Length: 98
Image 1 (cartoon, one colour):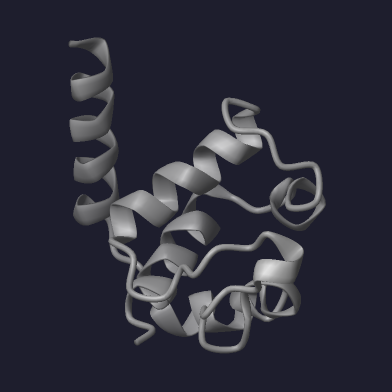
Image 2 (cartoon, rainbow, N blue to C red; image 1 turned 135 degrees about the vertical axis):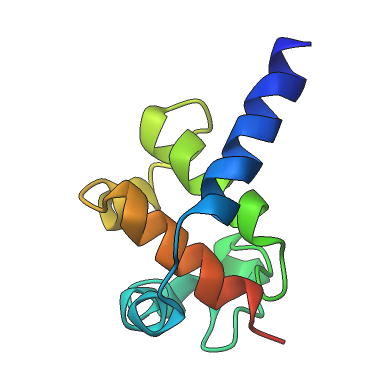
């Protein structure tokens, strides 16, 4: 039950606040080396395809990586100094990739 409530709150927080996909595109420049220019992923680097994922999923994943709930020592240096709004902007951009 607690997990469901957390998921709903995350979904509402992503949807409630304005996101700037243009800023997300600029922020995504750090992600290209692993996730690819179009978010297609890179099996050799164990970086999954992220293009077209739901914005709430991208956002909640970034939050979990930063908090340490999900572990990825390769990714952490790229996101540790990003703000919550940066995560929302990234999620808006990545979810729009095809």
